Length: 384
Image: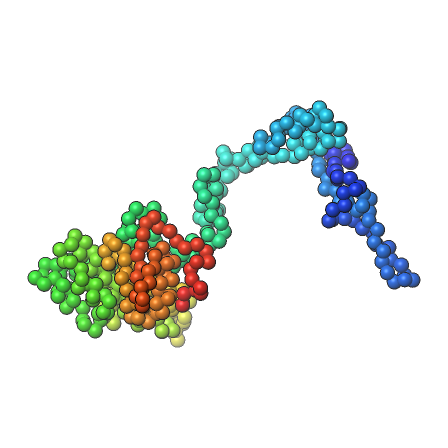
């Protein structure tokens, strides 16, 4: 034990015969003649004492500080009656050093300082969400790996409704396509529904060279009398144009900016092109032209951009298949995109789908409640 003008300090050890202490003080004595050092343990066999501090005047003003209800409630009473003076002082010091956050100026649940931080601009959205989540003790807390995996998933797959009660409500086709692109294609599909041969009118509305077989097959299988016919056909046509954009630019080093005042870009509706550049490309830093002004912006499709586009194409095609949210043959899409089928299956698993393999044919289905693979379950290797 020790003390100064204001504080008392105390510590204890189990005794001289207890020698499993791993942190010790030793004094080295160097013998010049022999050229060696002899180590000698300090007092109490070199025991390091971690002193605990108490302020007697604080206890005199505030009285005996209560102990944590989760600790042994009878322990202070036992020491009060039967413990030595040394043990009682140690116990009082421990109680005096406990701080209730609500008694700290500027802290606590009702603090104006905390509220200012929480509702102000000085805290990031991720930190604010973390604090809000920590308030709910009954909520399962996520590990750092789970949070990181969830953030990575959000960068790759479309926005999703984790609480959706039906598979068709998990992902939103209009959000994937973008409002402008969706409205343009949907208007054209609706106009074709007034024709005598609706399917033929839709197929003839796009040049034959711009159709992809797996999309054309789906369109011909959809029943024109179904309630969601126009919706599914709009999804399928959007997939068709996205595939054309992907195949056109996946091998290019850069993508030039497009003139959005025009109706088409190499046959693709300009709204589709603008949406693809928005979602699946990265704008390069501006360059200067010979006159000293900025050149038109250029874009690049990184590996992550390409992966993201493949995921969106697969899920949008799944939506086009109807409320069953099923892709019967993943291989037909993979071969068109010139992507290994293994990668497409990994992407769909990553988005919460279940993969079934029968012979050489792989299919995918989305079920609810939505669940994603845990960390380390994405595949033997990263896709692509």
